[in-house]
Amino acid sequence: MDLLPIGAPALPLDEAGKYVAGAYVVFLVLLLVYVAIMAAKLQRIERELRELATFAEARANAEEAAPQEEVSAP
Image (tube, rainbow, N blue to C red):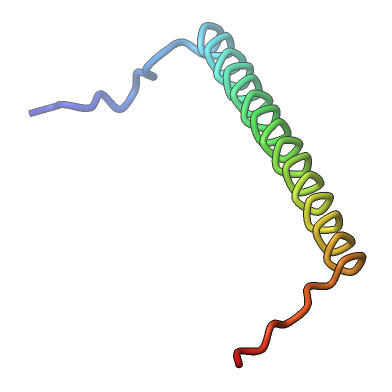
């Protein structure tokens, strides 16, 4: 039951370097894609937050300009 040969590596070291470099390249590409997606989401959220702040400011200005009179019941 000799399942793991002790003396033989999985790949010769001269071939393994290409796979390690390829793995690093794939990892960096995935990392860049992730950062780009997060940056796009952040920009969208900031834009929506600015719009909401503008709406809230306009509503507050409108309420200050024309305060509603309270109607008392007879």
